[in-house]
Length: 520
Image 1 (tube, rainbow, N blue to C red):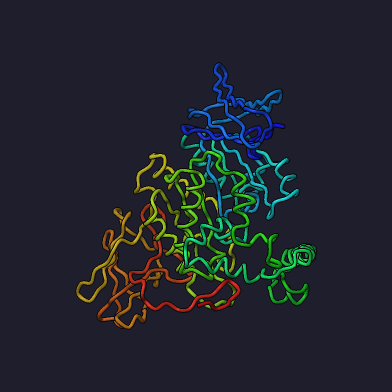
Image 2: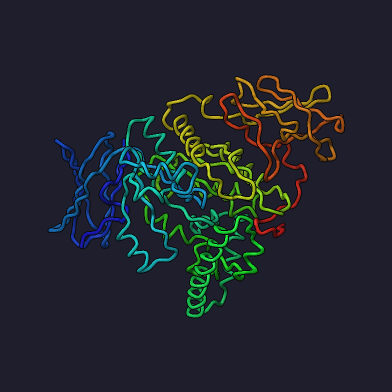
């Protein structure tokens, strides 16, 4: 018996200029892994221990197509059309999962797709270990950029990879490892969550929900949910497709309650730590250039601890890949609100948490996507700018191909009070700051009472001077501190100003989840 991990297949992309990890199972004593180039063969031999093996090929320059051959005893596995280039893992939830065929301009891109500089591997989406996952891995494979394959690729991942491939002149592989509706806690191990007291609620809530659970009864309930929800989703989807005035309350009245995400338990994909085992660990530690990450929406009911959660996730992933320097590029959430929902400002807190992680954790980047959100649509369609802004972060901080000035819009640095005005200074705004004509661009100031008023704005180079007649003695300021509003403030490079507040003790309102529940 000789098996490689499922991620190794024809058309795979291997990471250049790093040791190349290859692993699997076998029942012989040794295994040989050989990268066959046109006129050269690089081989390593490794002992098989306890039925598993792990080998590392020495670093290679970009190139291909090559052949990778794994041999053990009388058995041999050969992989064809292997490229060496750049490999990134695209993690997160539905906005990273959002398919190329459904994004703005995606249908035409899919129709005209031809094999080129981007390849994709989608980690099988199965929420529990077992035969279903084993079967899914048998058919999983690296895919070429063709109409039949690329329609279901991550749009953000594709646009990132396409830009990087063109800029660097190498093949770029994306490993899709994402699932809509998932908390960051789904993608971490239990030990990692237990290390942080503030994160214990994720585990406590799951343990409480499953305490004393009968396994047979749970499996029966979960299967009933799967069948019910499939009918519900189909009916609601058709209802929205055929009714321009469709609304959620009427959909519920017509088709019954939405039972998503189903009974909590060992098969529920939203359980903490679950997908870490069934998806992330299945591709770990495939040699990478770094991580792309678009997530936080599902943690909007706990925004005050999101920076701790995301920091813990980054630490866990880097430890799992045994590389504390692996780049981690974050998409900062755009504006969004649900129809009829109060502005809990929870997404403002999430954006702040994401920026805090970028500013405090080494080798991270942040793609500010503030203006790319859509009112009452949590899945904005324009994914190309998001993928390309992630690419700007990589081209600056990872590849050194562009300047810092090209990679960032204005980011808050500090402030001072002068003559009854509050002056805010920004990084990455040397060429100035522009506002696209709104009377209220989103800046507010407050005095000692922390009661905010819209501010009069005067731009002075990389500074903004704020004042308000209601606030003769300003103490603090904030910008775009809301879940949703029109975004009009940019740098001269057309990248949006990142939202901010100068005072983290400014008495913000209560916050809630997308379902409108209030949380402490």
